[in-house]
Length: 48
Image (cartoon, rainbow, N blue to C red):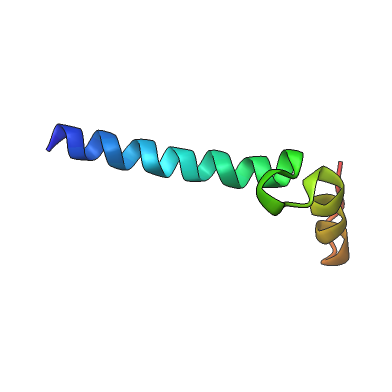
């Protein structure tokens, strides 16, 4: 049971890292900070 939970947490953590790197650095086909900021501005949210 403990190993199963550890494996689940590692897999979910890696998914979060991959998603974050899409937004931050443009890895894995993402648009990076400029593209993500442009999207937020297009829906009315001001970026920093």
